[in-house]
Amino acid sequence: MYNIQIILRREIQSFFNSPMAYIFLVIFAIVSGYFFTNTFFLFGQSDLRVLFDMIPLVYLFFIPAVSMGLIARENNIGTMETISTMPLNTYEFVIGKFLAGLSLIMLGLFATSIHFITLVAVGTNVDYGAIFSGYLGLALMGATFTSIGIYASSVTENQVVAFIIGVFLVLVFYMLDKTLVFAPQSIVGIIQFLAVDYHLSNISRGVIDSRNIIYFLSMIGFFIYLTIQTLEVRRWK
Amino acid sequence: MIKVTKLSKNYGSVNAVQSISFELKDGEIIGFLGANGAGKTTTLKMITGYLVPSAGSITVNDMDIIEDTHEIQKQIGYLPELNPLYTEMRVYDYLEFLAGIRKIKGKQFKEAFARVVEQCGLRGVVHKSISDCSKGYKQRIGLAAAMIHDPRILILDEPVTGLDPNQIVEIRKLIKSLGKEKLVFMSSHILQEIQATVDRIIIINNGKIVANGTSDELMGDFMGNVLLNMEIKGASIESIEHIQAKLPSVKYISLNESNGIQNVQFEYGKNKDPREELFKYAVKNKWSVLKMNPRTTNLEDIFRDLTMEGKKDV
Image 1 (cartoon, rainbow over the protein chains, first blue to last red):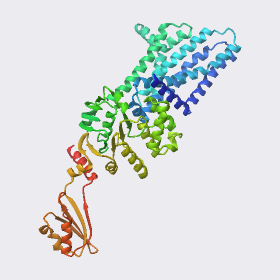
Image 2 (spheres, rainbow over the protein chains, first blue to last red; image 1 turned 60 degrees about the vertical axis):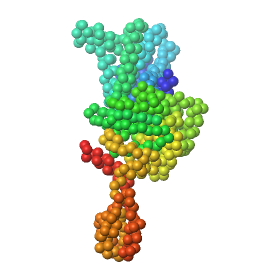
Image 3 (cartoon, each protein chain N blue to C red; image 1 turned 180 degrees about the vertical axis):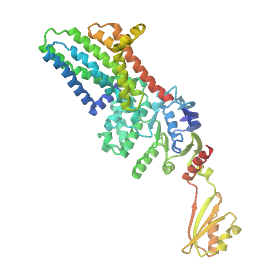
Image 4 (spheres, each protein chain N blue to C red; image 1 turned 45 degrees about the horizontal axis):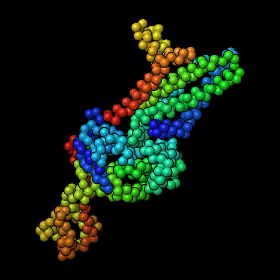
């Protein structure tokens, strides 16, 4: 546990030592601010629905960008060798990296709470439940995409390649829901269950069902496991 | 103590290391020599647990590298070949991070930090970002990182690459002083460096060990005849050419003459040094001896000999 903390702390320091974290947070804030203020002031809607609909699209590119370097860079500059020859378990390393990426995403998501405050201050009939479940869904989705991004980062030492693989994978899971009309009836259920958007929309509607939570947690677990295996296998090659 | 037994590593169809065995004892500085691609780095990576051997075993203080990887890694300090560093970090933070993984914190870290700063001469840069440090400092930071937990075993892959002659002397001194109590296993391309620093040399070629011994032993084993270069004046050609009749252990090889100076080459066996008799012979024949220079085999010759032979095998 202590090792996870150390990896996490170093990674977060490294985020904020480079312009990367600031650029991410500022752009995230601008994009989310634009979508909130548009509906709020122009259409006078007292909710965060449009914002919540937009954030997954922002995630599609932002999360692979945040996570692309987490492991690929270590492989690229060779620090992986330093880390791998220390008494540190691969899972501690991967989970530390995952939590670091997730922290940045959560910080971005947390920054949108300013809109929630605006809503509470000037809006009417605010549906607190929907907002809470909306945030929960986005947090789970962010964590899932981060685990996918980490996996993409572990299969290559080139950050650009990691980004492209990451975007491709998150896009696949995001778009699955939209391909249902083309799928044979027999596998519609399976595809729907695998689609991130399906589970997100359930939670966002305010229905916090254990099935959806289990889906997100198992996706996160699965990709973290894959990442650990990818790194372990490399030693045996 | 490190014991390597019939160790092999294959990368696909390439046999990087082929069934090598050797033993390294505590308090010994061992040089690991080999041409590029000979299998040095692969061997070091296996000893440090970064790569898993394809066959054979490595035991470090009676622990097996596969079963007790972390226990072994606690006892080893490793400086990888390319000296990878998190360049965006400050020197202090970097060492604190690595010490943290090794559970060295608080007061214990402060002491360890002071020790490596002193040993590696890092005082001027501790609060600098690593990216702002010169190459020599970066190398020393890598070394400090390998020593932060005061390991019993130090494995250094090309520790002096990229350093200037002064820094090389400093690092050599440091390695020598560390070698008094620790086991230091270092690879290098720089033969003089190895010769000046280590107690024992292991030479690897095409994944196989081709020599293992002290530099004197290796030279004894591999040295053939000694070639003696003499510069003389006023000698008659006959007295030079017929030297073997008077001194049977000396063989005449060649003679060049320029500007009145005769440059003669003789050869003699390594165990019989005939220089004294040769000098007396010169006096008797009224040669003026300007220079007498025996050229013995050096490590470079041995290295070239062993590694070129290996190439012929392939």
